[in-house]
Image (cartoon, rainbow, N blue to C red; front, top):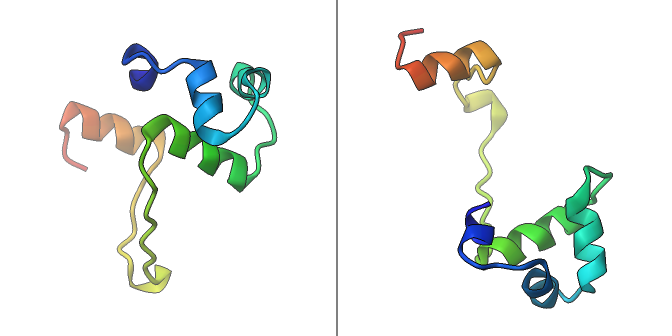
Length: 80
């Protein structure tokens, strides 16, 4: 939405990722079964920046709660 507010059109997004505007319109019109490549192309075209992914071993990562209650507590600034 930020990119759209900044003036990014579906036609410009299509040009950036090398797809026809009608294809981009169809992809953005409704949820679909996107491939990782499709999602990556769209994100790159929207942000104009390459995404860098940092890997970490799962067993060394502290447990995190991403459930709706935890997100609500975080937004309200309440302790866990």
